[in-house]
Length: 86
Image (cartoon, rainbow, N blue to C red):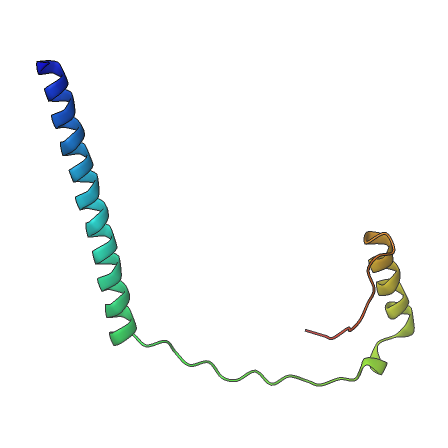
């Protein structure tokens, strides 16, 4: 029974050690996140200006190629509802 006691003691020490280390990781991570959010604010980005274009500006040959590609890839189940330039 002495060997079993040593095994259980090692099991307990190992589990407590893992719990303590993981708790420290979580607490330190939370503190770092709070510090960074408080003292190092995110740089504001300039707003992106979108160029609005109508759907009629797309070349008819390009439109046909896109529709054919979607039809081929989806085996006729897909359809093109909207095309917009990103």
